[in-house]
Image (cartoon, rainbow, N blue to C red; front, side):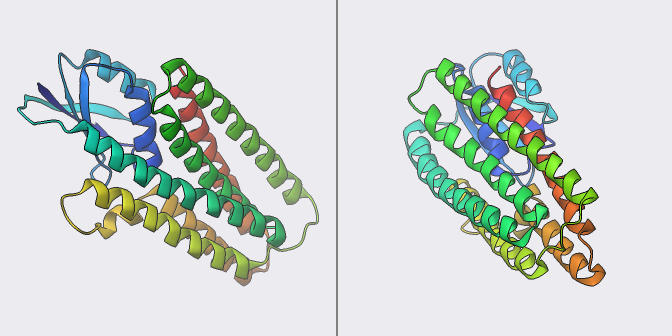
Length: 265
């Protein structure tokens, strides 16, 4: 059996791990995948050469590069890995969807595009986790069809959000409620930290989660960005910081939608 280690330079959150898992699903030569998100590394145990694996990973455009290939005698326990993975996926799916609803609600109440955009980021992660769960026991064609629908749905929401940012920028809408921006984003930050902790703890031989893994995640950076924007709204008494962070997050979510669509290829 071969052991191939890839550097995935743009893999920094669990949802991207799930996209890679779904993209590689169905390749019989692959026996096990091991992800190290903090180090942005993917280890694949497989039979045969890496040509097809490299091609498929390249389609996701996450900056994949083969860094080593060696022989391995590791014993694969696929049943235990799959069962544990499903439990974690359900947990993080529920966390992300609950905060999608919460952030969207308070974003609309507070007139904050930062919160609305962050809620769509939570929805994007929820869709990826849901697709991963749906993929179990489903045909490859059905999985790709659902991925395509989810990607286009997410993309349409992002485009609507960007248009709303433009409308608010030129319009006379009031200043967002900065207190809600900061409080809800802080709670979302805690939720994302818990999700990362659960996923990393389930995979790690250690009993704890490295703090660096949490704070290098895109999800955490987005939460911190909205909190910062809330502070700037308070200091400047302007809606501009909120619109700026909203635009940035919408663009990030749009990129996530394009990656979901790549799964459907």
